Image (cartoon, rainbow, N blue to C red; front, side, top):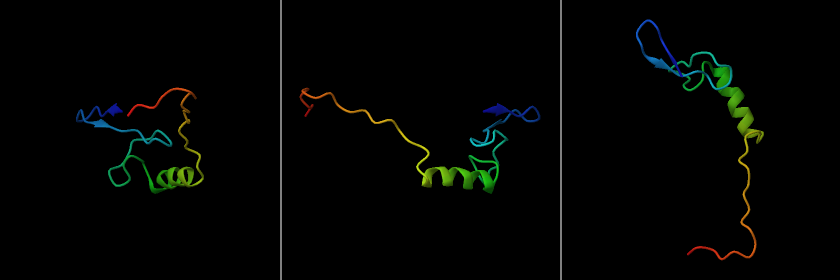
Amino acid sequence: MTTDATNGEKTLACSICGKPALPKYKPFCSARCADVDLHRWLNESYRAPAVEDPEGLPEDD
């Protein structure tokens, strides 16, 4: 997040390229960056690590 010097408003940076995000494509700066993000989701490039429960411990009810 950056602060605009002209009016003091905080703007988000595009999560793909780092340019200022535009309201039309928020949180991205363009349709291209939005499409890059969608492509990454569809190809399963974004993943959360799996945490397995240790065996032998009782489950909480």
